[in-house]
Image 1 (cartoon, rainbow, N blue to C red):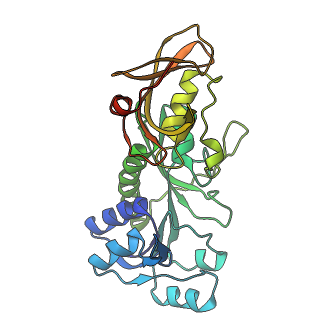
Image 2: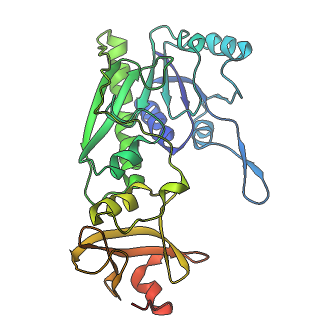
Length: 305
């Protein structure tokens, strides 16, 4: 069965790698155009492009998937199935109609929960205990297509969004291969999504989400730290210095006012929260500094409290 792949970041690379290792006939890889980065503004290829080139997979990087020439080019590849994983562009109906069997998307949540741009982060921000990946038939509306299959996984209480991202990328690759096998055998199911008021849209993250509000419960702030890894990261200001917070845990009960520093030692920096518990910061990065353990930071930057 002839497959065309569409994806851009490292999450998509994991899916593409599974397709290659499972020996599916990947005829081409579509990915975003190279983008300038760093001070020299040198054009940098996407992770999918880098992987595809090393495996002799033809790479296409259209600026728009709505151009007639692009659609004709894709038709000429004669895909039976198109597999999409974090491609980064909305696809027109004319493209969705091209593959012989189906165009499927690897989405990193259990749809219909967390349709949208940042499903992994929102699952952690909300303190969910379970998430997973969904293989869905693509539709014109974002993340609204029928479900082909889902695969679930528990979220470790200490796991951050970056770690979960890596796990779901592997799970997504496995699920995509399973979905292709079902399509090839003519046994792939279709389950319409039922979107109710209990489900949440996974909006894009922003820097406005970063500041820690110490009047909130410690557990909520703990989830904020975990959920905003690797970007934009939770932040707080202490004695005129801004810290990005990378690791923390919920500490002991306290009667101090929210925002009060309770201790600053080898165990970390404990700060009082709104529910009478402490959040203990164990890894941070001060503005202009390096990411490090809080205990190491305190050796050169003692905190008064």
